[in-house]
Image (cartoon, rainbow over all chains, first blue to last red; front, side, top):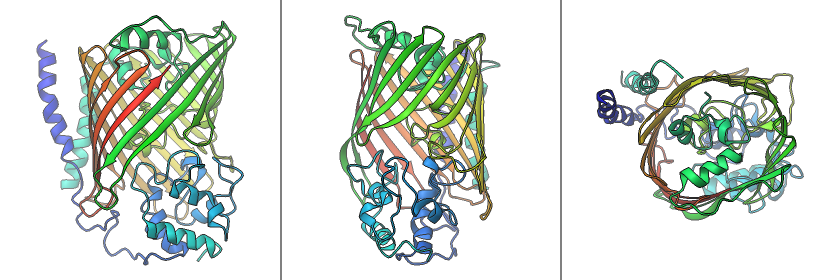
Length: 147
Length: 363
């Protein structure tokens, strides 16, 4: 019984210790990258989308060897996994169909299309802003080129 | 210095949970792992999928009707006949966020899943299907053949949830999101498990494409080893995934202890990504949960998640605190209210507090 009381009394201290743990963001930008990182302005090019959207937001999950549904959005890997690749959830659609944003599954996913499978991306985070979605649409409409 | 303190605090929390578990202790993932810890039962005791999650077996169905709910009604069996049994999960959530930039309130269907268990050779060979039928397109989350082996063992082949860590139903928990082992990321391969006495060992070999088409020779190994006793358990998980231009390794520990009405559990994970053309990325995630059983059918929960998304960058840690209450008023119904505080660095725009009410029907 005493051991149990000891454990229970120590629990609040343990929780307090770990709760006060969020970073203060010193020296970082809004995405947690070190200040001074060269980030291009948001524009409908792959490098800009990579630096402003795929990198800081999507790669929170879609990165590395275990990227969900095999979709890596790391620099150097994103275009190869997007353009002309059938989506796993909706195989009749490519993730990105150059020139056709309305038929690109990645647009369905970030816009929350009612016929898209699964949750709206980015999952568990605020939806992408209108500007962010617009540049992705424009990049696809312009041919989804390397840059 | 402060970064070191934060890491130390999070590691200390994980170690403290381990220490509380005593010297000892079966694999601990389940649809609600705290129920597994509270009862001292293995995942395989209640779920068709022996490593936890998804459809419940006969024992799990009986438990839900007789031990989980406040009130009991006439027993409802899940078997259609000696060959087929069915099940379902349905979750609808009303959620409002405090995100000032994009305030959002919505009602959504989080899950609509149907389960089918075909006992091809009773107690020897089972075919199991976990089919997501909503809220949008239908998809198969799990489909596998399950062969029972001696020593409470099994061999599984097909598409299934990869065995790693605590199988929390919350895919947004850092320990699930960042390790990549969620309910959205089943994989194709084989799994073998053995559970003699208090020991539970589960290992899997899968494509490593989280349900995507295979495009390389690399495979993913993932496994969990645990000791499970009546009131406490401790275990470790490891995973290694080789892809064409990237490699991921994850290593973690988890534990749980039951102190009468109070149940504590936790997990910590180190995740390391290597890339051919980019710098390596090392992450650390931890999770602690406490559940207090007020009366039968009424559970109060607090959970805390910690994430260091890049161990080479200082002051970038995130936390996620959730408090909530869940009610099982009648069999097969769970009503939960939760408040979640996601704390990012001050300049981030992703901070948002969320209040949610969820109705969860299960059978």
